[in-house]
Amino acid sequence: MRIAFALLAHQHPRVLERLISILVGAGHVVSVHFDRRASTADYSALAKRFDGNSSVRIISRFPVRWGQWSIVAATLCCLDEIAAAGWEPEYVYLMSGSDYPIRSASELEGFLARHQGREFIECVPSDLMRWVRGGPQRERYQYRFYFNWRDNPRLFEFAFALQKRLKLKRKFVRGFEPHMGSQWWVLTWNTLKQIMALAREPDIARFFRSTLIPDELFFQTLVHHLVPGRQIFGRPLTLYHFTDYGVPVVYYLDHADFLLRQPFFMARKLSPYNHALFDLLDACWRGERGTAPISDSAVGKVGSEYEKRRIAYREGPPGLPVVGQSPDKWSEDLGRLAIPYFAILSSSTAELAIIRRVLSIYPNVRIHGQIFHPERSEFAEDVSSFAGYSADDSALRNISAPNYIADLVRAEKSRMSGFMLRAGQGWHIDEVMFDRPNVRVAVIKSDRMISFAESLLPVHPHLDEAFDSEFLTLMPAETLARRFKRHLEEFQKNADRWAKLLQRAVDSKPPGWAIEIDLESFSHSLALERWLGIDPDWPRRAVMWESVDRDLARLKNLRQLIASTVASCPNGL
Image (cartoon, rainbow, N blue to C red; front, side, top):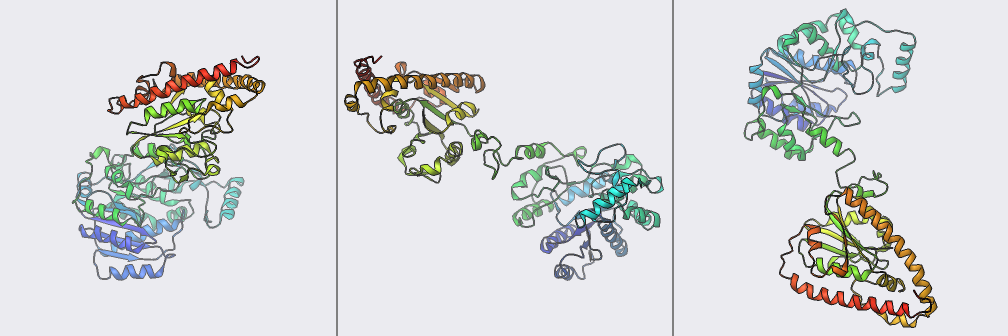
């Protein structure tokens, strides 16, 4: 099985030299048309490299422009060189200089040998089936296109609109049935010799020269005219994908595993700068590295893997921000974050401190304190900086609370992140926690007395600060009572809001991910461990509960002290 490869190229001569060398090394022949608009020095270097090699022919005759006849003309020049060389291959494989093999030469040869005589080209009847996702289809040949859409867009549009207005539609040449398909094909040499002869016919040449994007029309129509339908394998053997914008996808080294799974023999386009990828694919072409086995019936079929990735990555990689774009205006970067983490909400710092003490013993949990404290962020383990943020840089943190949490979560690679969120801190971040499906939320059933006492302080206390109740005795009784009544209204309003959000979260999150914690019945409970799905059998747990019991006792005494102080005020309750 001898294959002639027809290559259309215009740049990257080193990669092209490498491609030609491996194709020739497998015993095949190569004809190259190097775009005349490209670098003369690049063409000269390439021609010099293969000068005297009887298996390679390199020419540069046409300035090739997208969407015009010059692409077909360059392809026909490659075919003329194959004929002039007397190679007489069984098949010609049309490639671009950006293509590269993704399977072994023996696999390609074996496949073509088993299906010898068949034509591997997409042929879609353009009058019956839609070929392009957007833009003109039948109009490509019904009207005449003398101006390049990219070089002269205004003249292109004017001439097109004028013909439509004057109703200058034309019939297809010789009454052939127009067919369309991918530019990239593998055709028998016998069929191509007939196409080369037809291309010299004046009426055919004149007609196709003025069509739009004839490389997707010329060969496809003539193959359908010359070959019985049963002999046409209507799928290309070269893998390609397009983005939402109609731009070819470029493959890189991180696509290697994906490429080696695909039921194709070539892929386009490969980045010319990924030499490690070329090394890997060279080994595959030589048969030194295996690829995923494929059946003949699967060859040329595009699977759903890339399409799923394309849709998933349409807004950028999942979990990472998209510069200049926030798909969820409410939760910003947190709207893209899929990593599980947790948040504990309370109306008082003293209650949060107890929960943090319980969870801080577990090695697979990284629990931060009040990261939105007005004075400084309380990072886990009391570090002064984390995830690129300084603990005292409140201005940078407060630009966006959701983005801030997203950065902290992404910075932790091995443990589950958790946060202490006190009422009144962090913008609307508490509502985002209830809303996001990947966040476990625990709401402490807060004590109104503890919350009130902390509200009297100039600023919320830190988790590591002991509460000093002496200031209560220094405040005038009437002021204390008035502030207590006002605080009760705010406290209850927030409690009702959290209760509604919690119920909504219970219904929308996975079972057990949204809970309420009552510190009155909390002692030695495994509620938190069950909530986070962590192993409670930890040696330090018993020792930890001794300090937690002391904290709970102090909290109870503080609650009683505050209650008695408020009750002693005139009209205090």
